[in-house]
Amino acid sequence: MNKFYIQIVLFLLSVSVYLSNKTLATQPTRRNATKTKSKNRSDTHEEIFMKNYHLLCTDSVEIKHAENLMNDVVKHLKDYAKNKDYHYQRVGKPYDHMLYFENRLKDNLTIKKMKHRVDHSNKYNETINDLWDPNGPKFFDTGDVKRKIVRVYSPNLVMIQQRYENCPLGGQKYFYALVGKVQISKDVTVIAMASGNINDHHPSTKEYKNRIIKNANLFKTDIDSEDDIRNGKLKKTVLNIGGYYVENTYYNYFDVTYVESIDGNTPF
Image (tube, rainbow, N blue to C red; front, side):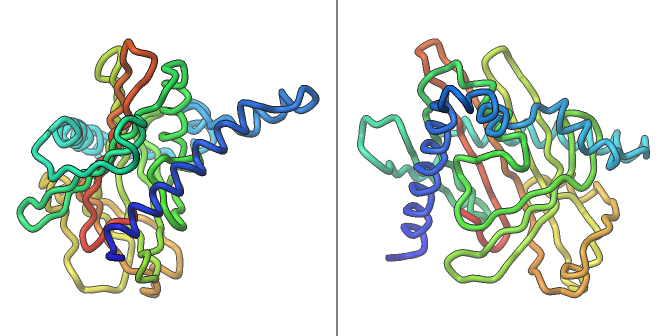
């Protein structure tokens, strides 16, 4: 079984776990109904902002640069999510409305796209909260993925650190990325991500560049990283672009499209 199909199997398992957890969360016992609902609900963007208020950036120039860059990233994410020029492969039963896998090669870059159809349009806002919350459940996570906010620019614009296992090869990797959430219409929300020129004090002399969002390389800032990063125990990567395009419909379902391009490999 080659690496791509191993990734597909892991992804199917991750979605199954996600949906099972959601089902359990919506079927609490009467005694624990209030407690279970509170425990399983992801934080809203306002709650996340307040919890991480101590990480608020006070540099007005950096904030402006981050906002301008995110505008560019959102446009690219939308284009890649809606672009149909991909090598297409269906996963699962033809009419299960579950999973679609697509990828393409562009300028020696692999850009992967996954599409998941979610029944019950009343889950739209809840799903967006899940995707925005670093600790919330994600449709497309496989293996050990850990995220945390390291800097806050506004309630809808942050910087994260993501660590993940390079399955199936093993070894932990990481990247830093700006993440922004934009509601571009009544029925469409975009959560877009891309790595900038982040000095995290990794000892490697390699030059790390974003090869899709060229403007991202002009966004420069320092991060006070952990000792394992400073000592080179993790491999640094670059998220060229990533994120979610969430589109509601009038047919009691909505689509979540995930786009990702990571230099070197992809965590799903």
